[in-house]
Amino acid sequence: MKLATLKDGSRDGQLVVVSRDLKTAHYVNDIAGKLQTVLDDWQFYAPQLQDVYDALNAGRARHPFAFDARACMAPLPRAYQWADGSAYVNHVELVRRARGAEMPPEFWTDPLLYQGGSDDLIGPHDDIVCASEAHGIDFEAEVAVITGDVKAGATPEQAAEGIRLLMLANDVSLRNLIPAELGKGFGFFQSKPATAFSPVAVTPDELGEAWRERRVHLPMTVHWNSKKVGWPDCGTDMVFDFGQLIAHICKTRNVRAGSIVGSGTISNVDRSKGYCCIAEKRMLEIIDGGQPVTGFMKFGDAVKIEMFDAQGHSVFGAIDQLVSARG
Image (spheres, rainbow, N blue to C red):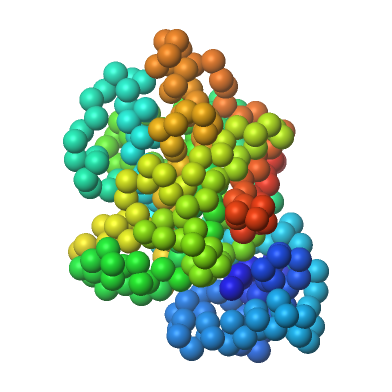
């Protein structure tokens, strides 16, 4: 099924069920008003929402209305945890090669994750707000999952059983703030503004055969100022699957329902697949020519991130954002 959260003036919005074709939606106040409620008791609420979803797709829903992605918040506007990985080690390797650094061998066997800000997650059409273009504004197209409860010490197989929903993410980075922050040894903070998510979150079964090996085997399509710049396959070159990423987080502690785990920037070794963040394009330019040519985003720039199934249908709807100055 497909779920979304509509803006209603509150912090957590209004949960709705969305049709498979993303054309209609249905309120489910009589079942659950917000997504976190559903995640807290998935086995009780999910079957009820599935019934609404089935009726909506069959044209039997009592009060359907036109779905508008522009009215959406993030599917989970506030999360108990936002842990972002770097499962596409090719991306990490390119960054290190560009600055002449050795690639530690453990990067291929032990996942990289950081703890992001989860108190302010934004909708698919909300602006990327930044104080200055000099910060080096960059998009990062990712796949993310929302979990139920996963016990400490879970294996990757057990951890994957806790995956409830999938969605797309734009994990915006302020590249020119990153070096100083990483130099302190504590990781990202000011260099990571609010992350945006796709209009809908979907259950894994919606992906059919494209969801296997705990990975999404579909291309990520990225447009920057209406120019298509990336179309890498999300299942290719993903060194750590979502089960492994979640298991890494819960090695010593529980992961609770309402946690979001990101894949990191989608990156294929095959350069013909383009790029899902500007930094990777710049790294390739440095490796090939000694210096970057491509600049970062400017105020007024647009980025669109979307995923289509084998039939050409949008799975999650599009993240479609403009960069704007802080007003």
